[in-house]
Length: 418
Image 1 (cartoon, one colour):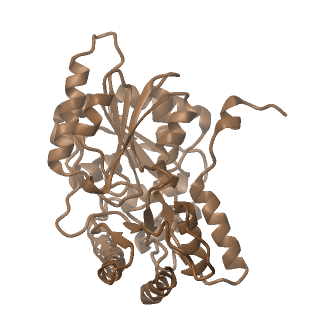
Image 2 (tube, rainbow, N blue to C red; image 1 turned 135 degrees about the vertical axis):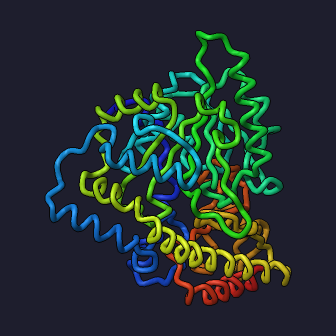
């Protein structure tokens, strides 16, 4: 049976595949420390009680009909006010588009800007840029970021790639790395974009920036979040933001996301989504419109939520540093943001107690899962080289009382190698 070129060539999600393997092991009774999913266990990280109450009340009020295609006005007004107060970005409700989370908005953005063969510049490891680029038949222009820059792309690495490109896909705090752009580096990148657009003729397509800031509320210690328009107001004409309640309120299943940027681009994205029908549900929209004005309750929730996430990240980081100090082939980057810890497990060339040589990084991943019962996502699932020894560890489903046991089992597995 012959199907479309897209369906025949689209690569399935490595994360979904890994998740299926883990669920099967758990179903068969194995104890797995599952740090793969960029999601939350609602029993550990519930959504805010005030938001939950508003959603229930909205359903009881029978708010179950179609919402406005661009998102209900009251919600867009609330998001605009929330963003202005929290991030200092002043956009009108007409410059916002609401959808069922960030994914439909990213898809609509790629569709609105890109033609087949257009160049998309993105760094790896990164979440799904390769798949969205393939969706629209665009050209992949990829730079691999490394640990020396906390796996964030630099202006120097991007500069040779922007000529003639149509989209630069950026994410900060970044999935999968949990790291952020510094103010200085993001300023340099913005200056590159502005210079490139100044060099183009009026009739030429401009270079746009997709700025995915889904995790921007979740920064730790002295780390600050920066955004293109906040640093360079001239970037307003070229920057489209992607944001949502998914991570900031541990509400991945509630499905309310938004994009904002130049009205011309946003209106085209809206037109595309009217044919897709990826609306956030009416009840959730009405609930969010009320909840976003509850400043004190939001601040209280975020203070507790961020503290709990940071504690998990730092305890695991410190545990890995202790193992590194003992001479084991592990490492980690200091937690900066999001719910992710970037960890290194460099065991290729080691031999297991059963005499099996770990020849490839995929063998290391299997060893971690089967011997240490530790499930983490390899960076090669996010487009990095197959030989990369780095992994994403997510704490969204982590129970604090299990951290010591996980680290102990990992040490036991490392000690068995020779």
